Length: 328
Image (cartoon, rainbow, N blue to C red):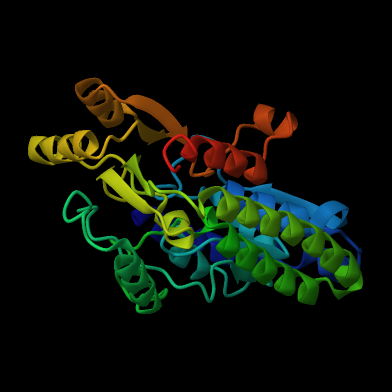
C-alpha cells in the first residue's frame, strides 16, 4: 500500500521524538490497549476490566479488510502498551503496520496464535451435498491442520475464527496471558476477569451443543461464507451463495444451482449478514419462496448498542436463536 510507504518515515521520526516520554517521567499509568475491531475489543475489555483503557481502531460499519490506518491511528498503536489483532487473514493491513514498530515498546498480541485456519474452496458449496456428512466433517478438520498463519494464501483463508465459541475462548486466554506478563502487578485481577469470561464462553458453547446435538437437519444457507468455523464446531454444513468476499459477483448459473438446492432440500430460511448487502439473499428468497433471516459475524457493534448492553455474547445468542429456525 502506498499509504504505508508514506507513513513509515513519519512514524520513525515520531517515535524517535516522543515514543518514551511517559516512562522517562516515571509516571504510573493504567494499561493502555489498542485493539483492531469489535471482537478483539470486547474480549480484551472483559480481561482488563477497570485496570486499563481499551480502545478499538475500527467502528461499526467499517470494513476490517480494506481499512488503512491514519497517522493518528499509527501513533496510537505505537504509544500503547499492548496492541491486539485477530490475524493477518482478517486484518490484512497489520503486517505493514508491524514493520513500523521497531522503535516502539508496544507488545503485540496475535489473538489467533495456535488456531488452525482452513482455506475456503471459493464457496463451491452447491455441489455434492448428498455425501456422508460425518466423513466430510472429519475431512474439514484434517484440512484445518494443514493451513496455519503465514502459509501465503490470504485470499482463500477464512478468518472468522471468533465465531466459534471454543476458539473465542482460546483467543481470550491468549490475550490474557500476554496482558498478565505486561502488567504483572494486576495479574490476579486479569486472571479473575478471564476466568469469569471464559465461564460465559463455555456456557455459550454448551448451549450451541445442546441445541444442535439431536438435530436432523444440519444444513443452513447463507449469503456470505462467514460461519464455517461455527459450522465445523457443531457438525453443521454451511451452504454459501457467495464466498469469503461478500461483494463477490455470483453467476446466474450459481444462483440457479443454489435455488435448486433450496427447493430440493426444503430449506426454510436464507440468512444474510447483518452488516452486509442482502441483495443476493433477497433475490433467492423471492425466487424460492423462502424466508430471510439474519446472522451476525460480530465484526462491529454501534456505540448506542454497546451502551444498551449488547456485546459479543448477546449477538452470539441471537445467532443461536436464528439458526434454530433451520437446524432442528
